[in-house]
Image 1 (cartoon, rainbow, N blue to C red):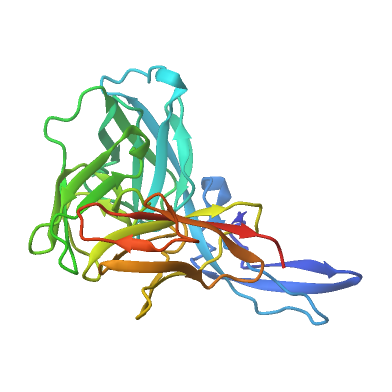
Image 2 (image 1 turned 45 degrees about the vertical axis):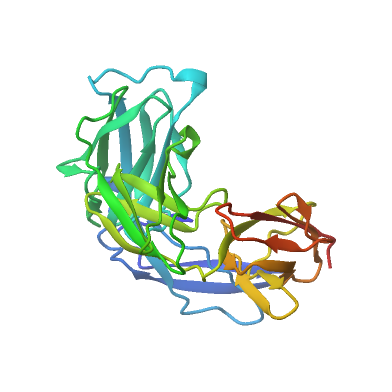
Length: 361
């Protein structure tokens, strides 16, 4: 929730009702200085997480809420010559997303329409702003004051009243874009393994780069434009998400895969309405001699990259909570609920797909 306080506010208090029993709840504000806020001087506000409260037969006191101040931001986008944005084909819009330096989303994806203006907020600290223009258009500059946001994060001071971001688009790429390299290694001796780097702001427009692991297990993507990227092996979603490429090379990424023949897999969802996809699921491969487990990556990926020796394997899912069951497991055109998965030495990467069902508790 977003809260606004007068400059003298140091705590707030309200009554909480549970059936016929009303109890008082007094909460002191903790964290950033509240006394510095003056609503008359600007539209800054305080952001606080939602905190669940269980009201019994006692007053709730001394409950502290961590407070973060949020700064209003106006993003203004024009064409490179200063003219207004055109009407994009098929009513497309500019995608916009914010990331802080810890690679955590500051908010949901939003869009900038033909007006070229979007109001948003930023938290104090270093923030990145990501724009994904329609196909055929390119971001040529993005500045906030003296900060070139294509090369470095924007440092947001807690005392800032308002931030103005100016961005420009063109139908021609920059002749010398501020590109960087992304480097890392893959364990397990997998030379020739294809890796994909996906620009999250422009993936819908096919903004994907491909490279291959060399004999030493190293990989490199060069000439990477500023933005946020996911590293993966097609067709699964992000394996290494939220890679920020701004102003300097990204190094020492690592993908851990055991030795053997690489395969990938992903959970496709549930066949019926459910409370959600369960967390902490694992895939089990049984060749009759030993059983190997691989954990599914957490939300939103729900996928895995693994490697197995040649042979036949029974495939199953472990960790399903009550009410859930496996609807289907398929791979290489085979129904893996009834038939084994056959792994052979090949450059082809098998893909396993899982579908769950939910019948309730």
